[in-house]
Image (cartoon, rainbow, N blue to C red; front, side, top):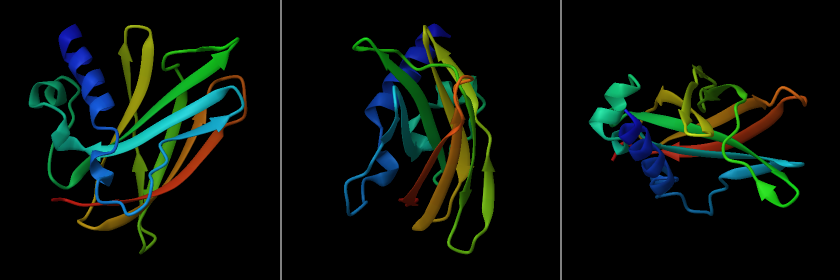
Length: 151
């Protein structure tokens, strides 16, 4: 199981923007909130190996993607690994149809990150609203858009 988690961690690092390859402008994948940084990316579910998807009960498919969220904190020049947090969110398309995101907590050694699977249509522009809490501060709010492609 540990090797599966390590493979997933490496894969997430390697595919930070696979679903956004065709985006015409630079993609932002993190936002700072004081000492905290929220890292986020969207990628196709098919980028995860079948064994890893099975281990986490993730459904793979050309119309399915994952939102990855990780929280780090910088103190005294040292940046933490992914920290535990509360994460909730939703997507909304141009027709204002909303889809709630259910995040799965992934712990890998001392690092924690969160994955939320969702379904999309080809060439669909999705607006993401995500709130992250660290237990100490008010929620940090991320809003961003991504256009996703099935091919």
